[in-house]
Image (cartoon, rainbow, N blue to C red; front, side, top):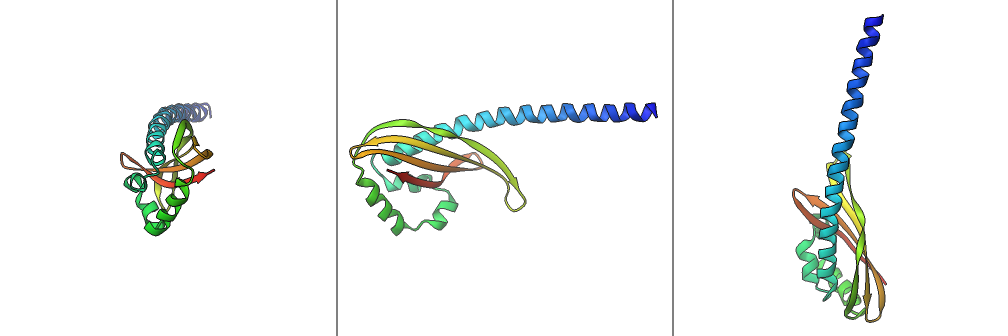
Length: 146
């Protein structure tokens, strides 16, 4: 009985060590993903809103985005966005990356950010969803609230 308890204790200790190592790895990887996704989000938002350039959005768009957003609809949206006027000030973005694992899609790395900007006609929030394919971040969703 004593030997069984010692073995179970050893197995439990090994599981605890593996769990702690896993948490440490995820924390380090998560922090790196947050840093790189925030940098990408800030650059992408500034590129799109500085001149309301639809091509800048399309160039960064993910296959998922392209499959659901039609060019005609995007042109209408950008015509509305241009009514905000010229960008006066971009105040940065806030958000974070996340890793999810699902049966249907496997491991998916995504991020969500909200950028703040001031335009000639007033303030706006830019909601940006990102997805990472391989080593490349791409835009999954783009919405402007003004």
